Amino acid sequence: MRRFLRQAPKARQAPRATRGRQARVAARRAVRRAVRAGTVWITSAPGTYLWLAALFVTAVALHRMSPGFEEDFLRRRSTNIHELSTDPVRVLIASAFWIDGGVWVPYAVLYTVFHAPAEHWLGTARWLAVVALAHVGATLLSEGVLSWAIRHGHAPQSAVNTLDIGVSYALAGVIAVLTYRVPKPWHLPYLGAVLIFFGTPLIAERSFTDLGHFAAVLIGLACYPLTRGRGRRRNLDRHTDNGVRTPS
Image (tube, rainbow, N blue to C red; front, side, top):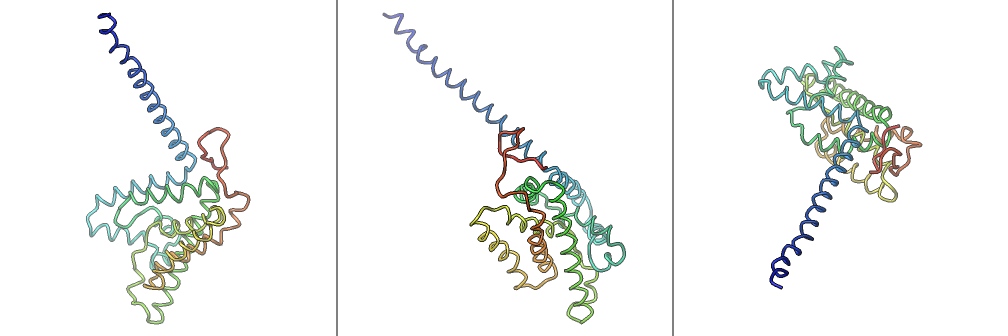
């Protein structure tokens, strides 16, 4: 009897040890699933994350520059009127790889929330088309309006050298085109929120960058033909079981 009583605690500890091992195994499996899902998410949006990686490199480079050199460096890569009239192709490409201020983390979040789902849905080629159309179209339109304002005395002559770099026009266009992916009836509230978010600053401030953002939204909405045949719902890829659709 005494021997049995001495062994009873050990018997009670055995199920606890088993449950502990099962919990650790389940945790390791959950981590592996999360890592696998994250890997598939990133590799199935190569354009988004290669671009984001390039922005990280340039953001680090900006932090190593002196303030005076940084301003001159960015101005030569800016899509302002002077640079566009000198070498438009170069600055249209270069401006998309620099972030004013070099703050990278918010863009990592925004790219994951908007660019990656758009690339998953549209495929890399169509996503890149939306990005290029929004970036180039909004830049040319906003700078064209600014040029008109300078000629008619509504803006100072110094505005031809305004610093205008960044990826926000492309982001606005992608945010807008995602309207066609949101299921009914939520696509209309989503569209309303997008128009209010980008339209309010344009009404209040009426700056050329606000005009560019709103123009990029309209360009994104005009990219509807690129979304045809892509569907609204995410399909399961036959090589994965996590719902992430690889570009086709």
